[in-house]
Amino acid sequence: MLIGIISDTHDNMDQLRKAVGLFNRRKVEHVIHAGDYISPFTFRVLKELQCDLTGIFGNNDGDKLLLQDMSSERIFNQPHIFELNGRKIIVIHEHHIVDALADSGHYDIVIYGHTHKPEIRNIRDTLIINPGEAGSWLYGKSTVALLDLSNMKAEIINL
Image (cartoon, rainbow, N blue to C red; front, side, top):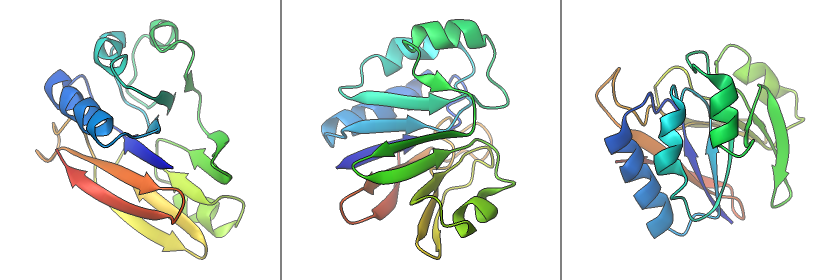
């Protein structure tokens, strides 16, 4: 199962369109958004995804009620824990407890955002992924991640 991972879109609709296009072309089966959509109108683009979406709220998200409504209630408070393809996943926005979560051994995958810096690494048997900033406002580099859940191989993709 191929999943797409995105974070920190920060209302950059052009880069969000590129990410959605990439996910659709690659036939991603599920997208995880690690927070900081900012405005509910981002779902005008996200509704074009040809797969399910699971997301969390970030520290900069504005109108949470309308974001929740526009997402068809697919955005959750953090931490959000769920399973996909037999893999236990925890999604958080901030980075402060990433290593502790991975070191706990309770999760197969820890996904986070907030730092705007892409990262893929392991602690023990737990895969840690930060897709970087899709919005490109902070560092000028727009990235997302792809993860194949069958072999636990992930890659950072430049948009």
